[in-house]
Amino acid sequence: MATKVTSTHTERITAHDGGTFDAFCAVPDGGRAPGVLLFQEIFGVNENMRGLAERMADAGYLTLVPDMFWRIEPGFERRDESGIADGVEMVQRLDRELAAADMTSTFAHLLGMPGCTGKVGAVGFCLGGVLTYTCAALARVDGRGLDAAVPYYGSGIHEMLDWADRITCPIMFHYGVADPYIPVEAVAQVAAAFADRPDAIVHRYDAGHAFSNWDAPSLWDKAAADLAWEHTLAFLAEHLH
Image 1: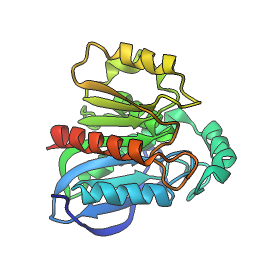
Image 2 (image 1 turned 120 degrees about the vertical axis):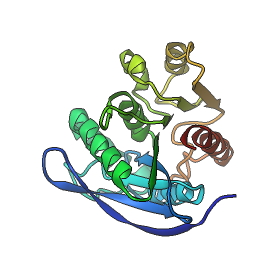
Image 3 (image 1 turned 90 degrees about the vertical axis):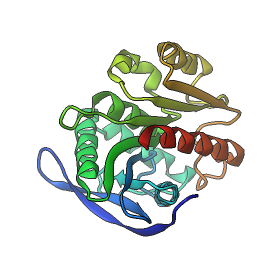
């Protein structure tokens, strides 16, 4: 049975090179829990991401959503399709090396929280799907990486398959077969790169891009979103408990 969220608040993360940045935190009832790093779409840490964090906490996970645009515009937030141009501009200005370091800092912070059992997974959407894949490949805290990773429709992952052997945790990919930004050939490349990994799963849905974003009506596909969420929670339950 899903637990209930007892609280949400802001955690302050210390960056490796000085400075601090915010992470939205959703805390499940019942004390200690496995942790989940939740990575944003191009719209920033908006109402959709906060809602997803609360849903993740309802499922029993201590959840952090770091502001990955803090070095450019702290608190950047857009809601729906009208913010796509602004979001794309932010992505173009994002320093991927520093982003990887900031994810590692957030990972370390979550591991250090009293409520975290020590198991940590990552889930991300759109840009966050690429960030989740990057986090799984590169983020290490005292030599340990993530325990599970779930990238949703990460549009650049098929161009990062030279990192596949760096991903040592179980990983589940979600894609829409009608995604205009990710050709079916790109999804096939990802599937092929992980074909010999029994702990790597590629799910395809009859949906387009950003099908899990209920704040973007022209993109959201409830049936696909619900099924993907069911798959995600089952995968996290298997690997974080």
